[in-house]
Image (cartoon, rainbow, N blue to C red; front, side, top):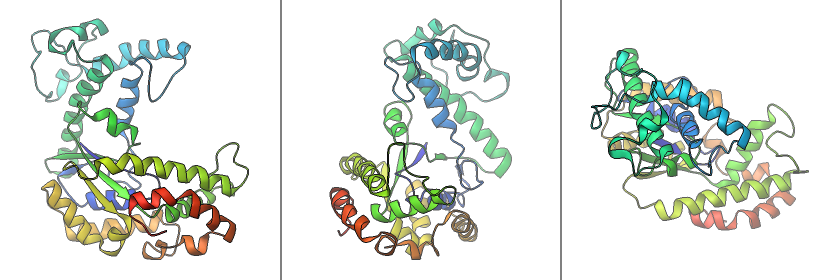
Amino acid sequence: MLVVGGSGRTGSTMIMAMLAAMPAVAFDRQPPYEVLHLTHLARLAATWSEPSPQPAPSTEVRARIRRLIERDVLPRVHRERRGHVNTTAPTGGDDVHARRIRGSHLLDGDHQQQALDRRFLGDGWTTLAAALAEGHRAEMGATARWYAEKPPLWLVDALDGVVDHRVIARVRDPRDAFCSHRAFFRRRHPTHGRQRGERDDLAYIRRFAQQQLDYARWLAPRSDSTTLRVIRYEDAVREPLATARELASWLDVVVETDAATTHLARSEESHGTSGGAVASMGRWQSDLSAPERAVAAEAFAEALELLGYEP
């Protein structure tokens, strides 16, 4: 599993375009690459925990969700365990769609000490990964070594100890990220991007800055991990093919240069909010008004330091 993690408007589409040029990486290759198979599975798994983390259904909804999971989901994501406790990934066919089993049956075997939501996620991923690999082989004619997804960051922590994974952590000057975020949503509505209760863009900046700080604090202790690679937006924009080759080397896969050039061009054309990726660097200096720059200087100060940007 390959997680393309980070805050919004930090180059996820660009990174996925690079991965799209690597035949051994599986995912939906249609921009903006938003099919989140594992994220949906993790949200279902979360409903089995007490208290439920993400999402957090109400008491009335939770029982209904559990009944639906037992009826419609368990038969598809859990193989029959009797006599197959140590079995490996399913190979497809009827074997994947095991007959209906009771939730209590999952307490059998060697998984008794693991919380039910984590078993659900682990076993569900075993089945899902096999299906995704089979689909990728049929569509691309290549064997998948990785499956990539750009999910919310809470999923990264949920995977720890359950699903083997690596993380591509995206980093961008948070002031530029804010300007891109605001421009992207204002294409739809003048106040889109703001949340309820935010009367002006100064409040919007403060809230966005807090999200950036939360991400920077999350990333700081993990930045030296061998299973995490930090990609700076600015570096990727200046040298996209070099960045693609760097990622391919880290993943031990091949990148097709011509395909990378094509995918990158399409992603910039369809997803940009400025005159181009290069033009988007340092855009905060012209996009922010004087009052907004004053608020941003204070609100983004700690995140800028943690992420390695000049104030």
